[in-house]
Length: 349
Image (cartoon, rainbow, N blue to C red; front, side):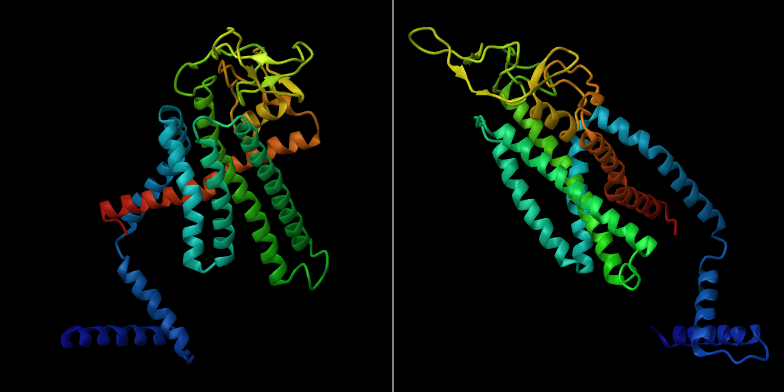
């Protein structure tokens, strides 16, 4: 800073200091009070005449927040692939970025362990040819994560209620207990939301590999009777034989017999459209994989049919709550970034 500018700044600070002293005649102000008054007056001088600019910024904020739901819905319907990739990237990367900047290494460690496990699951789900047990293992993994994250977030919520009502004085109101309850609830919700996004990648890839289902076009295979198109294995139900099932698309050499399809003996679930699946497979597709359509014919599925016990009802409520949480973890930071970019382009402060 030049000598002239330094003298000007000193004179300006002296003027403000004199003004701060004159504001409270007969009272001796502390240095901290004088500094606060000086900072406040500098802020007023800096933003003097910016009322119109602030009004424009506020209107841009209101318009952005009001149009966000419609914009996200339109984006998801017209360009589902890019929407899914951006959503997954923001969910997986934004919290670790802020955690790393704040030194929350415990969260970073848990995030890395979870990421490594899911990278292996994604690797198995994208192999071709697909191993017969992979679809069921993938859905079982994400179903386990869904239940575990629900249990952890529920525990965190109970602990937070203990803090709110101070159930155990001098313990539940301590900083350690409050921080633990908040972090427990956040871990459960965040990793549950993260798994909800990753399972969509697996379901799309496995469905395309099996050929019985396709999100972008018609299935490449005809679905044989009593075959689950989610996992590709045979069904055993009251209406089907308990012997070996055969695929219409496979052929064998010599005798003309068709190779058998692996049959899995477990309860089945038939949708309103008439297509039947393993109960765990269709639950993984609809509830865990957040799809409300039939994997084969794309007819709408009534999720109420999956509410067979109290846990089922709580599970559907939980996964619905996760979708609302997505806004705060993913779309809110992205919206703030977009607003900051618009303000910078327009020269608004």
